[in-house]
Image 1 (cartoon, helix red, strand yellow):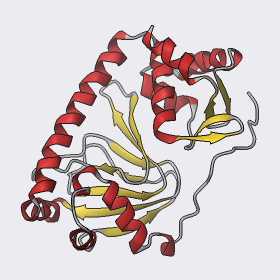
Image 2 (tube, helix red, strand yellow; image 1 turned 120 degrees about the vertical axis):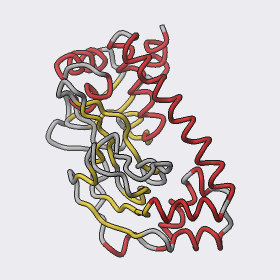
Image 3 (cartoon, one colour; image 1 turned 90 degrees about the horizontal axis):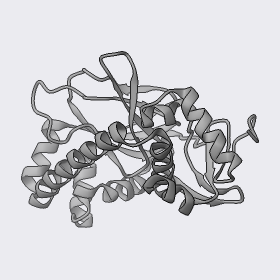
Image 4 (cartoon, helix red, strand yellow; image 1 turned 180 degrees about the vertical axis):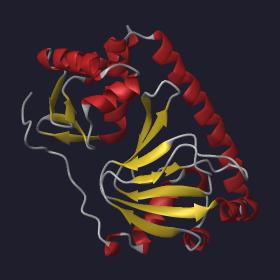
Length: 248
């Protein structure tokens, strides 16, 4: 693999002053259930959130802990990991600024169904679920959106289970690369650079396979000039071909 000791990824250095009110408002407005709020209402909602900075590799909460907070990514990247009964990890999602995590509909006594960890330095907004329920009561559009989004996430989870259980591993990894390129891809001299740290273990955990199998398939994709990759980074050279592989 090329460039194993260097990385083209942008590594955020997040200081306290970087999580400004304007940035908070910008990212809160990106959260689906806040999109219909006007500026004044969004500012009122922002005051209910508290900001906290995390270093790369920190755990924000663990699977099985009591669910008490809803969180929004302001800066940096987060990954959500599920720990299975047989001791393996499944990487459920990778999040970018403007996305939320933690269940907005969790009830008293509910627990987090995944572990949330930082992939980079990050600034995270948090709100207690009791306070978020008050926001839902105050703004009906938020309440309706939460119900729709919860349904969509459930359908997405079912679709993920389907492809993990039925598709060959090569198709799964091609599908994941296209999905990540659509979400995190930035044009770069190397190709469409997936702008977040991405290890072979991360890919393996997302595809429900071993790191060895993921590495073998990624090496083949690189030999076929579909991707360029190095230590914890991947750039897509031929997205149409990866789409074809994932759909064939």
